[in-house]
Image (cartoon, rainbow, N blue to C red; front, side, top):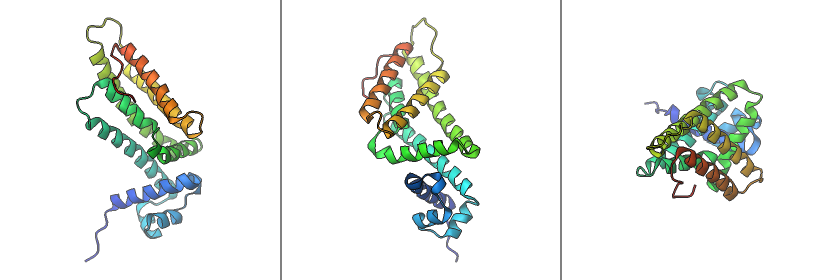
Length: 211
């Protein structure tokens, strides 16, 4: 009886191999043959999962974006009793990829961002990933706004606008740490400063835990 193949599992395995090669050579240096070697599958197996290199790269970008989003959700789900303000701080920290164990992932993400400047399909996939992260931040900001403004009279900040600014900040901090302009600790401090100011606008107390 023919062996059953889990194509989704294989596609994720290939995506991981793509990320390793992107970290070494950039997206333009990735070939389907090299991916097959790194993933320890045949070239034919790669070609059955992805018709073209571009299709393979697009899936890899989606894979990285989903991995970051799932990590954020897992961290939030792991502490259900935390305040809305603390939850937002944890989410922003995960998205910024500041920890040492996420440094390779940060390099891969920014390599895709750089390539997207000359690849509209890649840019479109990145916009989708960024939109998902922005929506997640927007929901957390809305929750923090609702809980922090009990009895307040001032007009609340716009969660969507604040989420857009926070996402842009986290993305910029990722770049600054990678090129050595900021240390991870300095970037965390900049992020905390922004969040504390946001709490003040939301009339919420500053988070009790560090980001």
